Length: 448
View 1 (spheres, rainbow, N blue to C red):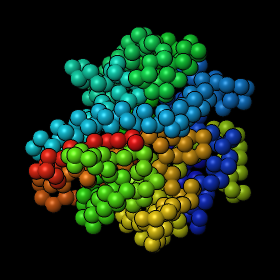
View 2: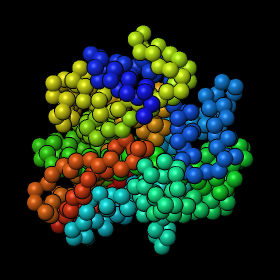
View 3: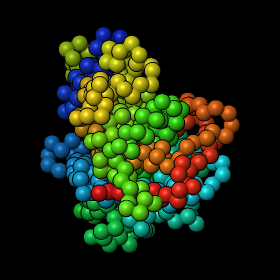
View 4: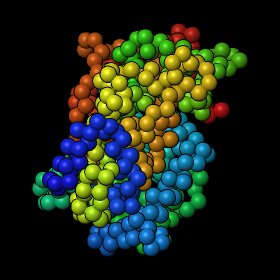
C-alpha cells in the first residue's frame, strides 16, 4: 500500500475540518490527477491490448492539446449535460421499465434487488445503445454476464492469471467484449435510436484508430459507470422510503400534488418526470440522503509531482491519494451530531418543503457521491432523474409487503473497488400490491 495512502487517510480522519481538506485536493487538480490513475486501472479492468493502452495514456491531462481520455471526458460530459439528450435517455429507459412494472403487478413473491438488477440493466443499456443493445438479447444472457464480471472485478484488477483467479469473470468479460465488438463492427452513425453518448464514443474511437475488438473491451468498462452504482442506489431508495411509513406518506402527498396528472377519462394517471427535481423536494432530498449513507467508495488521485497540500501535508511524486466517501459523509462537522441518522429533511430548508427552492445547499466538499472536479460523474443528471422517477412510480402505484418478516434495511457489501454504492449483503423478498387496481387505473411515465 503506498505510504501516501496511509498518510492522507490519517490526516483526513484527524483534521478538525476533514471535509474542507477535500477542497484542497480539488484545487490541486493539475498535480493531483485522476486521469493517470484511471487510465492505468482501465487496462486491468477491460483487458484491452497494449497498443490501445498507449493511445489511452497519451497526453492524459491535455497539456499538449487533445488526447483520447480528455476527448472522451469532455464530449461525454457535454452529451450528458444536454437537456434533450438527458430526456431522450430517461424516456427510453423508463419506457422499458414500464413493461417490467406492469409485469411486477402480476408477480407473486420476488427478490427486489435481483428484479431491479435484471430490469434496469436491460433498460438502461438500451437507452444508451439503442435497439441493437447486446445486453437486451435475453437468449445470450449478457446482462447476467455483466454482473459476473462486476463481482470478479477485484481479482481481475490484480491482472495476474485472470483465467485462474477469476475464471467466471474473465469469461464474462470476454463475452461482453465480443458482443460489443460485433455491435461496433455493424455500427451505423446517425441513428436517432441511440444516445448521443454512444455516438460520441464511436466517433472518438474511430478517430483514434481503436479497433472494434478493443472498442468492445473499452465498452465493458463503460458499463460499470452505467450500471454498477445506480442499481444499488435504486434499491436503497425504495427500501428506505417503504421502511419509514411517515416518509412514504409525505412523498406520496408531494407527488400527488405536484407531478401527477389524470386524463379526462379518469383511468390513466401520468407521472411528469421533468418536474421531479424542481417540485418534489422531499423526494430529491431522500435521494441525496440515500447517497450520503450508501455512497461509500473512495476518490483517488495520482501525485504527478511533489506538492505541499493545504500548507501541511507533503505528498511525493508517484504516490496515490485515496479519500473515502464514508468519512466525508459521516463528518459531524459538516452534518451535525445526527450524522449517522437517516434524515432526508437535513437537505431541506426548514419550513419550505412545498414552496420555492427548498433544497438546502450543502458543501461540495462534504457531499461527494458523484465525485468532483475533473472526475465528476458525467451521468449524474441521468442517474438522478431515473432513480427519482422509478421510486416515484413505485410508491404511487404499489404498496410493498415484505415476505419474510418485517422490512429491514440490509447492510451493504463491498464487491468491487470500482463501485461507490455497494449492493446489499442480502436481498429482500417482497410482494407488490397495486393501490388502485380495483378502479382500473393505468399509470404512465410522461415527459411533458
